Amino acid sequence: MSLILGVVAFLLQFVAVGFVPGINAIIVGNSARKSIKASNGLKTGDRSAKAGVILGWTSIVMSAVCLCIGVAALTIYVFTCGGAPVC
Image 1 (cartoon, rainbow, N blue to C red):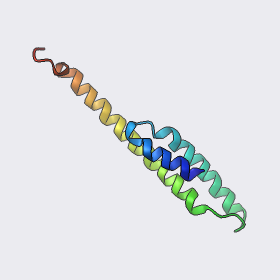
Image 2 (image 1 turned 90 degrees about the vertical axis):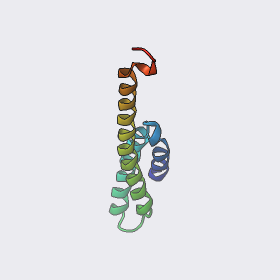
Image 3 (image 1 turned 60 degrees about the vertical axis):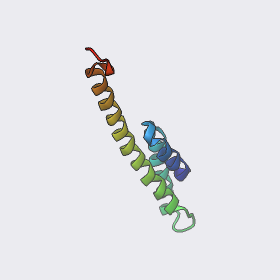
């Protein structure tokens, strides 16, 4: 489940909403990794849980970067008269 959430978060990161499934991927992935470690080898899937956590963190960081770029672009647009020929 963590890997699925991580992939969804990774796909949504460029529209600055990847942090929503990204946070869920991190929570579910860390919970799964703890459960896998506690099972003493009876449960598998640590690699996919770890991949989900990594994708979750990546999507959170990239969503923040995209959000900052979007705000900066909007600010520049507004303060340059919105492209109007005369200000």
